[in-house]
Image (cartoon, rainbow, N blue to C red; front, top):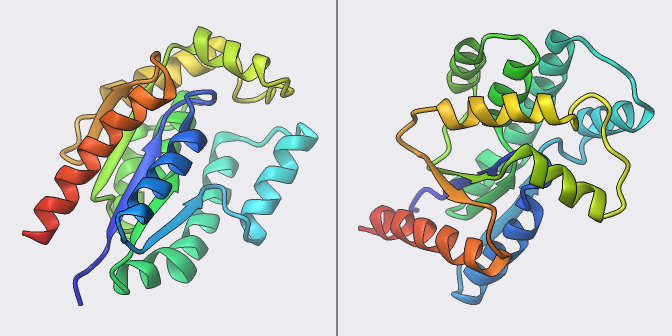
Length: 203
């Protein structure tokens, strides 16, 4: 059986990753592909704990944040990602380990070390799409949704630094698309990248 493909959508809060995951998954399924949609933090025990702590405004050190995400990811890979890839499915995830590189990197940890540790433990994405958006516009969108800002991560200075780290990454599987345009335009660009990946894997 042909091994599946792992596609990760990345970007700062408010970039529209969730919308693009939905559009991508719908489009791929309409073409008859087996697709698994997922996200990080997950809905597993560690992921739920991360979300609960975030909602409660609990402040963790960058190392504690990273440890929590790594525990969640280990479970995620073991229980969902690897089995789906082994079955030949396309796995589309809203965030993966580059989020830790950027966010915990912006919080003061070494981005290169975070990347190295994750790449050694977890499957490398076949394709990661960075939906690039200014921190100012991202927070405008968060506020427009009527959501309460995360006091740890959703500050303009922090998101600006996070974006800078994302944009500095030079990885063969990472591609950037502008998130400043409308969702359908972003979707078309993402689909083009995914079709290139799937065509290459099929060949």
